[in-house]
Amino acid sequence: MDMKVEFHYVFKMLNCPVLPLNFAPYAEHLLKVLQELQAGAETIREEFSLNSLLRRAEEFRDIARELEDKVRSIPKKGRASDSLREELNHCLLWVSRHINPVVHSDAGPTEQLSMETFGATPFPRINEIKRLAEIGDPGKPEFQFLKTKLLRQRNAVEDGFYQANELIRKTLERLRLLTL
Image 1 (cartoon, rainbow, N blue to C red):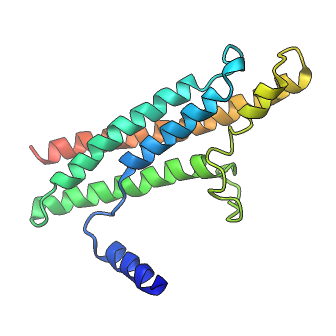
Image 2 (image 1 turned 90 degrees about the horizontal axis):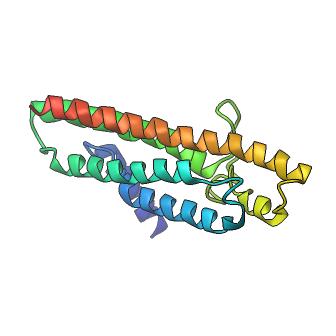
């Protein structure tokens, strides 16, 4: 049965005109995880928060829905639809490349990902926000060191969302022009 499922998945991936990647439910899940992380660190919200990252994640959720609507509206056949599908596939592939590493890994862009820990904890880069909340005292040096580390890591995650959002936005604009 496992082999049938795997074969079906590979067959579908190879024969789909548009990659079967729907980021809308994924974006909704990511937003919930980020909200839970922020809720777990309410005591230090004045010192460190995920507000800017939450806004990027909300934007990602909204435009991912718009992208999915566009994917569903593409005709199955036709010359114009070939260029639309090509544009969408490029976008879906690169959105995945921007989002997945920052969501599932703490490796930098030039570091090798460890598949032992990839995906084990969502947002491993900023997961230490819980520890920052446990320290709690902004006067402690360990609090300041960890806060600085988390600021850099939050910026890296936010940049992944920014890159994905920009790519989706530009793709939707090009698709509007192609369908005129």
